[in-house]
Every structure is written in structure tokens, then in C-alpha cells.
Image (cartoon, rainbow, N blue to C red; front, side, top):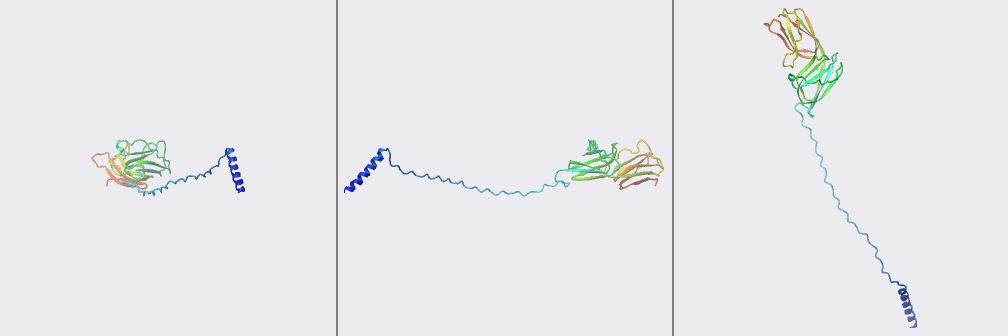
Length: 232
């Protein structure tokens, strides 16, 4: 019994000592649990539809870009100095497309970005004398125009004096200038002209206007040619 008292007294004394020191029995602290973040839902992107490419419609002449070009190849032995391109030469040939350039023998020049259409085209030498021309030429893509020279020899074996001689590309719709100038081609005389290879129309007009002109259409100047005038 005495031992029990001693234990109780000792316990009471321990409690009293703790209180005397101002202490209190500390409550256990809770360990904080970090909040769990809720992930945002993942959005699956819709599949991308790749459009099927379509070919652009072709122009009537075969171009898909709306423009064409003319490449001029000089196979003559002289310089080509002026190039004219117009939709109607009767209203004027317009500006020189070569500007300050020349196309020397063996060289080429390409005129680009020509809108699709029909054109009159003329190339001249450095004296601005016509070498060749195309009329109502369809530009519907990339065109090559080769200028090669040929010689036309006109022989007057007739008994008539010739006062006018015309030579025009077959594609021309009118006769041009008198190639004799102010002279005449008398019986037995010969004149020569340098032309570009291609098709040409010829006309000789006698000084006697009661006599019909002599003509030839579509003469193929694929080399040097002779055109003879006679009484037959």
C-alpha cells in the first residue's frame, strides 16, 4: 500500500513540474498531404485533309500560264537590230522590243511574257529595213522564229519595162513598198534581194498599165531562188 502511494506521489510531482515550467502536452501535428492535381483532358486533333491538286485549265492555244514567248534565232550573216510586236500593224508597229540590244549572227533573243493572242511581228536590220515579218501569228506558248537568209534573183527576160516590184511574206494581207524605188527593171536586167527563208508572195507591175501585173504566191525561199519574167 505504501508503495502505491509513493508511485502516485511521484506521478503527481512529475505533472506538477511540467505545469510549473509552463509546458503543455503537445498535440501531434498532421503531416500535410499535397493536393493531387487533376490533369486536363488531352484533345486529339482532327486529322488534316490534304486537298487533291487540280491542274490549271489550259488556254485554247495550249499555255497554262496565260503568256507565251518568241525566241528569235539569227542564222544570217548580219545583225538584227529591231524587233516589233503588235496586235495590229496597221495602227503602227510600236516600240522596238530589242531596245538597245542587237541579235548578232549566231545569237538568239527571247521576248517573254507575251499575253496569249494573235500578233504581227517584224524583224529588221540596223537600217530598220525589214528582214522578215509574220502576220496574224498565234502566240499560245513558246515559239521559235529562225531568221535565215536566202537570195532572190529577179530576171526580166520579157519585152516589158517593170516599174514596180513587190515582195511580201505570204501571211501579209496587203502589198508593201515598191522594192525598185524610183528605178525601173528594163528588159534583160537583173536585180537581187536578200530575203529570210520562208514563204513569199511576188508581184511585178509593168510600166504599161494596160498590162496586168505578174504575180506568184507562196514562193518557198528555202534557199537561193530565181524568178524569171517572160512574155510567155
